[in-house]
Length: 159
Image (cartoon, one colour):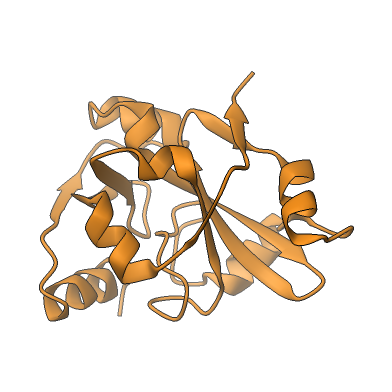
């Protein structure tokens, strides 16, 4: 079953309101926000990191970057790095590279989810749904109640 189908089935089973759109091919979160006519601050991108205890999803606005030093400090981890493309392909075989939705914590993926607080300030959240064409939009509060992420401060303005 495709990621988008699993995602929609999960949202419908939980009776969570959402909207699914398809847009022209876009590879980066910023491009996707632009082609979908969304403010980059409300489009969530997923950056997977690896620490001593395994992988985790970090979720942040499209116009921000992950500050690994902030994450290392927050978790007292000296060995925290970005996941490689090969690791991402192994972790998310049914997703196009870089298009995984932020639904870890046992929902669609078995890894913890850390979200930057800036994203939680938005009324709605939008994100890739397994492809570089599919986007799901939903209420941020619904996403938070569904995923139950750890809220941290680890994103900085992109250079």
